[in-house]
Length: 278
Image 1: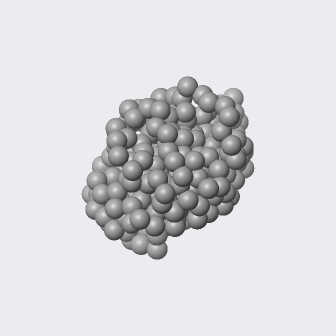
Image 2: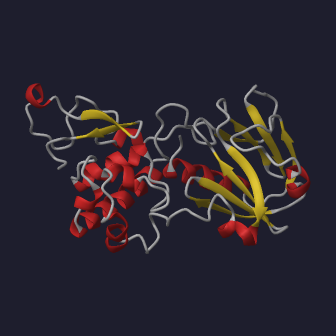
Image 3: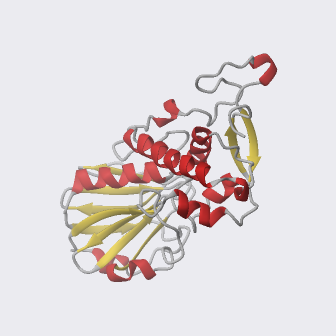
């Protein structure tokens, strides 16, 4: 699933390529995504001009001049492409938007994505956003904030920092990388993480996400950028999908330590160094 850096990359690509264009038409080939695409969405957005592009958690929000906003989620395998023309069609091209500056195509083989709208003034109250946590780049996301949220939780810290009601956008890849940077075991009970360690964790969450955004995200399976290019942050991963390899600055005897380890936590693969992360 595209995580925060990938969604931020897609949002930025849309903004740079299309800017404040006008939506001329929309063709919905399949309304049956994670949630049913509203049947009146064409009436709502056709003819409207795009005013602003935002990212909230793992959602792209496109605000229009008619006081409505489009809300887009990529799901597990969703991709957006931006082209000057639309001559080739794929069976998984579920949504095609013609704008005054080109075409936006949403392709999603698994159909776990989402495409909907709401009134712009009601975004904070919309069901997708009303119960989620703060952004990792929000100034409120501090060591004190994180410590206050985790100090009574006995669940593993990796599970807790992926809780979208606490902080949004930290998915499996970046949780593993941030915990490695902070030298905290993913299995450590959250209530055993100190305030000082929370400071390190907040710093590493933000640092990892910034580096991933700069690299265009991580391409592991389905993700690609709207221009068809790939993200490159996977080349900077310290532990994610590095089972048996050395972590950065490793001085271990790999025959004895077996290198980076992989485990399953909450149904997701977790990668960590048992010697550096305690």
